[in-house]
Length: 297
Image 1 (cartoon, helix red, strand yellow):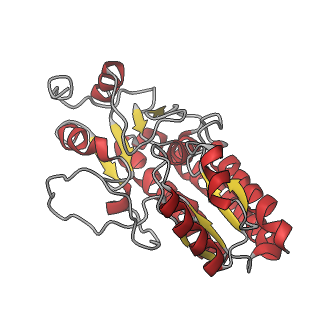
Image 2 (spheres, one colour):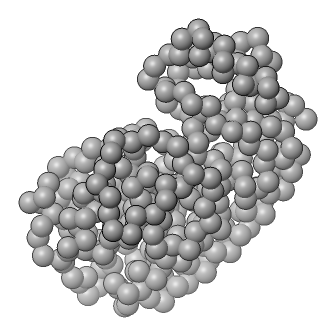
């Protein structure tokens, strides 16, 4: 991998836009919207693969080798990418969004990862699902536009115009979601993945917390009883899981509690990649919340 990524930095050729790689789909959607009409960025992680545990394929390493710009969120999300990012920084513009964008952060994030070597200027481990706050989405788009204008000034007018259109669209999307969530704003819920603090904070939702549950291992009877007691104590109406959780496990957990269950997906795993993936993801997240919480209103 190191050998593949150690070549000299390519220059942006006249004519075609820069070769851009983005690690995760929601950020890819925002960058794709900024680049529309110039070039299409390459999405590194698609489908149900987790950015926490992803392994690069050789073909993707070659794609990164040719990149002019690479956008990734940060070590607390794409743990696998830390060493690759350091290698790429010698020959490409590597943008770690959680370091460079003017973001609004939620609560500290509680994923447990393998120990890593501290890097200069390390930042606290905050919720890395930053795009779930629409205002962070705009900050990411603005950062992307600034970087692309620097790398590819010939297409600066297009980047600037696209970013202005995206800003209007995301502002309208935020207002739309805010209005739709109003009837369920006070209904308490919990999640199995601590990924939604920014969304809940932005829209004033009553997120009661996150339950720690490993999707790869079924909990024992004592653990199930403790989790059920927590649900009752918090008075939650809904428990939200994610696509990787086994539905049977969730049914066992909520049996006899009267709690409903739903599925939330912060990455849009089955949404087609492209500029429309971000609004599609946010609308689906909203619809999933309303479908479950609305029954308690």
